Image 1 (tube, rainbow, N blue to C red):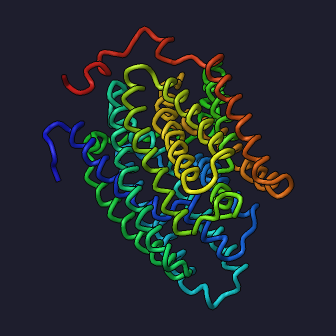
Image 2: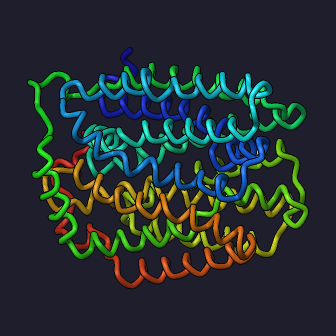
Image 3: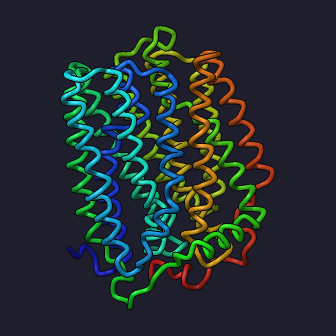
Length: 429
């Protein structure tokens, strides 16, 4: 399938379509809403529901060092990544669908544990390839346009995701029984396969070149880790991101809060539909921050994201009910967009050596450690001190992240003489 003579434009179109398709399936079963409500249906407590964020942000990040060691072919990287999703990642959705469909015949406590475990395996299997996948996408586009391409594709992800979230919420609003959750999971798996079919049409220049093997020597990878960490600006960047992740590790518990009387007592279907506000925020954030980052540097995008995170947490403390829920998830969506388009472009640009995959991995491993532990701590705090105290502490940590980023982190572009000629000529214009 050839959509345009220019391979950059062709790949950008394919990326928008495939990310959009993946976004539809992902939003239908968003962990922060869909799985939070699903686990609560089987009697899961705050700690288990809070740990969804540990799975989503931490579990998906700490596994990726395995991808560096397993996916070493550059020429066949696209093929191997797609096969991994088709053969390993997506089948977990079908297994989850089967488990939930037959859950009325099983003890609820065991169903909750198995759902949690399968969700962890699903996220972890994606985490294994996230660094390699990011390196592959980064190699397809020059720095000068990469932010905009990523922003457009992630905007597509979010727009179609809003449709998926609204569809799931509409279905669950009137029929919240487990078997309807199973239908959503099954549809999500089918749409995920369609997304991988789209990615198979990316025109990867590496496929036309002689075989190259990425570095798989663990000692070399560790030496690149150390080289990355010796860069002071990269360490400050990681510090800001760690505080940001810590300050937003309680998002799955927000669903519990809004379903309670003190949060407005929303219907579970209404809550899942409100999750569409996340994808609207993601769409706006990815589109705007990708363009802004290419023009002004992606540090600005991180600043916008943290400010939106602070706004979301502030609203959570003062506006209960439907409007509070919508506003929170919208600003949370913009914050999450910053954590993708701004974070990853800044991560690419702070690489001080020639092994981008290792640099991505050490950055995400550091975030993964906090991403794993912070949600568990959030669940403990919620159990002991209550949800409102947890939200207040999260607001304080987020304010600290904003101060850290403003004072200590410099945009990597400021430290360079400018873009290379190849980057400036990225679009062929």
